[in-house]
Length: 463
Ligand code: NAD
Ligand code: UDX
Image 1 (cartoon, protein in one colour):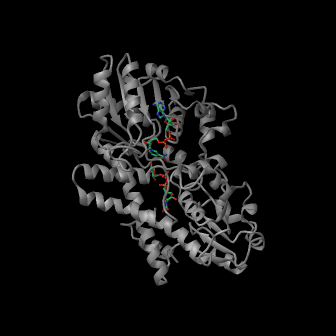
Image 2: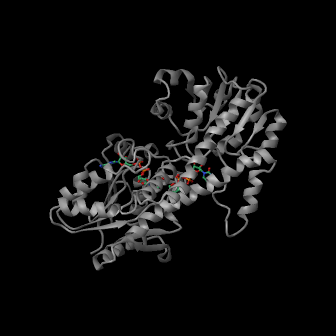
Image 3: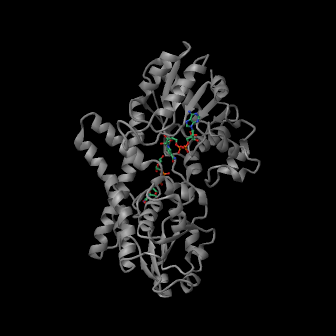
């Protein structure tokens, strides 16, 4: 029997876009995305489709094309589980903030809650798909819970990690490099795999749909993120050496990237990688390696994080040093708060940590980001608990006008590579700043020579 009804638990950055694309490409399947967060579901259902809670280029059009037809957003989790033939678990799996594995292991409490809820509600056989990124061997824990607390129905567990990147989620989903599906090697397992393959085959070429055993699939996701983050930390490590030696990291990246064995992607030096995945997944990988006693393996991967922390810190330190060793009372304009362009997501954004360091030095920060809201920015800062909420609000202001952010500033720091920054009237910005007017370009985004010609003191990363 083909899959007729899908439920996805978790209407976040993965669940929302992924299910929207599945629904659009599979008009015969009813897709219901559920979440405990009522505000988030209300936003997904907002009459004005531009108000959906996640900003991704092209996403609102896809949602508009199938919402109310075969795509539904709801808080009725039990009902959606009960109806579904296939249930995707797409809830968050953050780093643990307490107990054993604190600061490293993935917190699987939301996953376990989902498993227990599915077990309690399910009255017929279901295929349960791990869409969240999970430690290798989590499927056996889910299976254990389902089999031991369920109503005697059969469950098949598949691993189907998501490789989309934020800001390009729609394109990544429509044209994935590959779709990975891991399942049991038994006949039932293979049947379940085939049902999920059939769904993706509605739009993904068959040769791009890769099937493996469950453990390879789970581990491949952590490995992919570790390799990607490692490339960023590698080029960032070299950026510091470039600054000391007169080499230019952009030139070095181009030179090595033209070697087809290395490849040109993910070699952009920056203020440090952010996002909800890289750090969390590498810490998780490190924790797993340690738990098997593989200390050298753990140390190897941990260095990727250590390097990234260093890169974020040294960006702030350089601002302080360059501004004559004090930023106290000086206005610094932050262009960008999101962890990368084309998203409103700020999780682990380098901007948060740079702002935190500069606020500790009593700088006055004015932030402009085209998609991030003020309450999110203060939430991010308050979460660090470095100072009181009042102090954060005294030290940092948020504006929706980039020119106002830069007005009478001593320096501008580019934290996100938003395209619009390139098109600003930089002469006008320069004229309204205090002199010397500094730009610290944490993304190597702007035209260095043009800015220097205007009069700016420009510093990029790695040159
Ligand atoms: P998210 O925080 O945006 O969304 C998760 C949602 O799950 C939240 O809205 C939360 O309210 C909901 N939720 C949690 N427990 C629930 C429960 N018991 N019942 C119903 N809803 C519940 O997270 P995300 O960014 O979508 O990430 C989800 C998973 O996908 C994570 O494991 C992440 O590592 C992985 N992933 C994320 C990305 C990305 O770019 N964000 C990419 C690939 C994989
Ligand atoms: C990442 C993975 O790319 C994706 O496959 C996975 O599913 C989720 O995690 P995401 O975090 O959304 O995606 O964005 P990504 O494009 O990977 O960027 C992560 C961070 O690295 C950003 O802060 C980005 O600015 C930074 N980065 C990326 C660089 O600094 N330089 C680069 O060359 C590439």
